[in-house]
Amino acid sequence: MWHLYLDESGDLGFDFQDKHPTQYLTISILAISQPGVVKGISCAVKKTLRRKVNRRTKREQELKGTSSTIAVKRHFYEQIAACRFGIHALTLEKRNVREHLRNTPHAKSRLYNYIAKQVLSQIPFEMADGSVQLIVDKSKSGREIRDFNQYVQNHLEGRLNPTCRLDIFHRHSDADRTLSAADLFCWGIFRRHEQADEEWYSLFKEKVLYDERYFAS
Image (cartoon, rainbow, N blue to C red; front, side):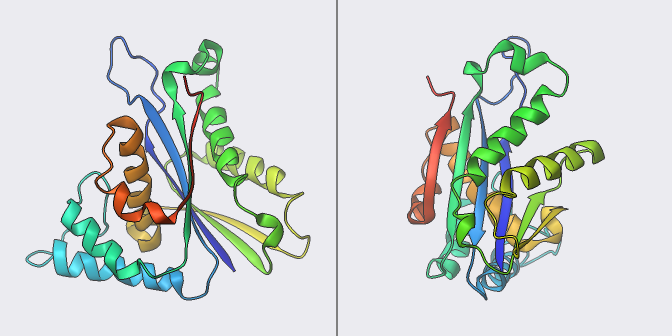
C-alpha cells in the first residue's frame, strides 16, 4: 500500500496592496511506499513531542512547522533519516498569477486543485499495486472536498492499474502524526522560497525528489 500525505504552506490571498498575504503557496506530498515507514514516522513524532515539547506539560498534540524550533525538528528527523520516503513539492509564485485566476468564482480552489495535480503528476502511480491512500490536511469545505476528490480521481484514473484501489481521506494533522510530519517538511520547502531560509530544509533535502516553482518569473 502506498501512503501519500498532502499538505500546504502559505495562503491563496492576492491582495498585496492592502493586506499581507504570503508571496508563495507550497503544496507538497510526503510519499511512502514501504511497509513500516508510516509507523516509524508516527512514532518519531510521538517521541519528539514527549521528549522535546511536552516534558513539563501535555498541551501540544502535533509538531508544527511554524512553531517547532530547529532543535525539535532536528531531533525528529534524526529518528527517521534512515527511512525510505520521498517528498514532492510545487511552489506557486503568486504575483505572477493572472488576474482572472485570482478573482473569478471558485478560482482559488480550482487553482489549488491544479497545483496539487501537478505535484501528483511527479509520482509514478503506474508502479503502484494493491492500493493508494491519499491523506489530505483537512482545511476545505464540504463542497471543496468533493470537488478536490473528483478532480484527483479523474486525473489518476488513467494512471492507476484498474485493480489498484484509491482512497482519499481529509484529516486534521493533530489526529494523524504522519500528516503532522508532512506539515514540517512542507513548511521547510515553503520557507526556502518565501524567506530564502534553508536551515530546516538543508537537513532533509536528500529526501526531496521534486521541488519547483510554478508561474516563476
